[in-house]
View 1 (cartoon, chains in turn orange, blue):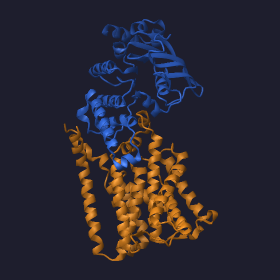
View 2 (cartoon, rainbow over the protein chains, first blue to last red; view 1 turned 30 degrees about the vertical axis):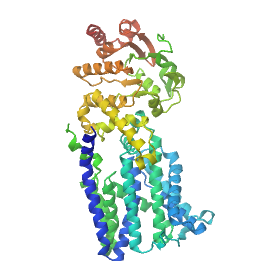
View 3 (cartoon, chains in turn red, blue; view 1 turned 180 degrees about the horizontal axis):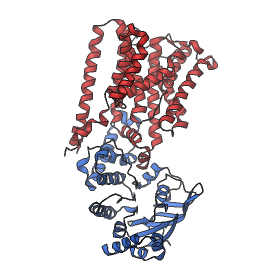
View 4 (cartoon, rainbow over the protein chains, first blue to last red; view 1 turned 120 degrees about the horizontal axis):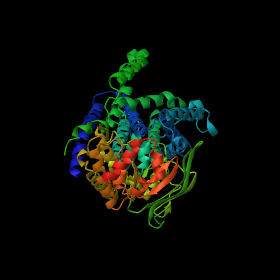
Length: 326
Length: 272
């Protein structure tokens, strides 16, 4: 039985792993041929991949429509900035702490709304995003610096080397992506990943089959928020200035679009879509005033011709091919 | 009314009531289900049978009464906790994980028997792998038992109706239940399929699992049940062996108004 199973999953996984290998090869070669400017573009691509993958856990794996994911990203970035300013804590420690802070926020803030479904949840998470952003603007206890935001002077250090240049950040960000991919791979193939999918498919049936759906949802929100928060630390050190303007509703919408356009639940899809969202606008700088027009057009065309996303999740399609195998 | 003593009862409901607004869906319902038996719950549409199931499985909370399973109260448990104590169920309208494979559907039943948490899954510990291997083994057994092992990598939505019914039973069995609750398992099945189903249900009972089912197909009910309880307007109006129930005047009246039902009873009697 074991060989049968692994043969099946190998079929569906092979396309994904081919994609990841091509991507890895590209990312290794790429920096040798381009300017710092394009390396920077890829740093932000990587940051968006981290955010997209974290949101994909919530939206893709569990099917919870969260359109306020930037809130957790903001919690992480501000936690890192505030603690760095006040206590000068090491950035690696802060990355962990801001991840934990965002995970706690993810758990506490979504606890009262966990029972909501579909578009109802979506509306409330939009509100959540706005509440966090406005709170940041209001400068509670003089912590967040109001509309001007905060300056982050400290940087990540590796054996005395300061991570500063575009290529340093490039390695840091894509290294984090690799780690995250490995972790997601493990989770997807465990009872936790399966429980998430059962909840997405039919929450009532999942509950009646012995799955604590509330636990599964909370866990997804905590992990997703935690990763977004840790990513916020990277963003804060990269930008050196963070302000509420970086954590708008529009940013949440584009993250949500990344997950949906990529192909809900699909890791290659998220990577491709966030690349498209980051890189295409850069390529079209000359047509900057038409950018949103193109974006809107692309959205409409996608929904008409490829509603399943750029790279649909293999879980939802490829396995069918092997169904008759005995 | 109760025949089996509470010591030998797997499930014991006493005075259970549930109202929705002004509607008394279930009122003062009592029933003991003996260990190792097949008990059927029958009654006209809207009699409250499925509500009883939903009360047992924790989807609804009863307004009053007591429910004990295997010696412990299950009054305040959430649905997934009810499953953990050993009650598995199927739904009248199938509720499968349509876009997942049959194997994945059935492995779901083992979720509550496994313990690996976030860290264990991340580190892929030996304990996690052992536990998963066992879960896969049990899922395989359940699929084989229902005769749908060949569809293990097929998506649930691609199966025929009869096989989907089997898949749902396999998923319930994978939770390793002490009591299996089936909501109209023969609904929509043809004669051959429901004959097979009767064999499966008997097998399940013979393997030591108590079975409690709602069914409209009188041939199935009279063919496999050790005990039959009859509901009408949220109340239990009769209980007994299939023969007793068939000749109970209250039951005949509940089902009357239509000669067809009478015929069905008669036919079922002959089939036995």
